[in-house]
Image (cartoon, rainbow, N blue to C red; front, side, top):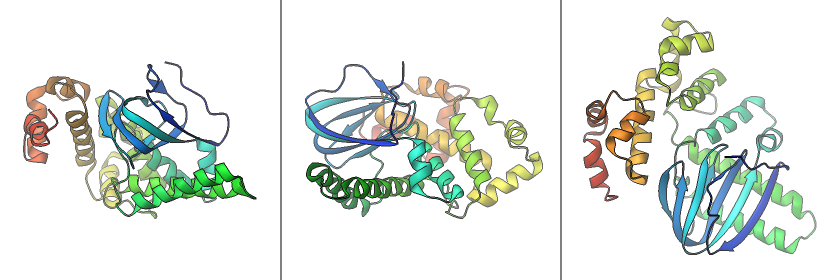
Length: 281
């Protein structure tokens, strides 16, 4: 599937739709999609999420997505690339790297990214302000719009950061962020997640790697990898029709029994019970 290309640092679009493109889409840029009104289903990377008014979705480069519209839906689209992040989100290189990492950290997960309740009305207000600026086009409207876009991206980064390891803060060093990004990029490749592989890739001694990772994140390397995998398992249980053995295979568990044991150890119930308890299937 050929990815769509963005030729400007950012662009804005809003429109009411009765139906979405028949074909799944893939971008080579970031895309924020806000639901101004309407209901339906978001489909991303083979997962499903029931959307409604006020939901905000972040699609990262290479995500495959589409929408099934149940009632006429007005979407607000904000598309931006890494150039915009580098130039506008902050002049400090380390800050820019953190924002880029946080945005990439949303990969593999469907659903609304607004986890901080106070940010929901704030995002709604900011998007309404952008629409007013674009419609009225008064003096300096482009500059004001750009500043609001910058604020929205920063709020999005804050909400995604709520899902980061507990010790990750603004002062956290760049190397551990690179390790986390590497783990998430390679989460489906068990060989690349071995401590020896990580040690060689980042040129950190094997003995020091574990201590460094725990000091920076508050959890062991193995615990982080397992918990990240289990969050992906939960996503598939809640938002897809995949069978347990299919999920086990995709995420490199030895078999369904192995996944059941690990899931129960960390979540207190097996995957089937988790799916049933959440009333999805």
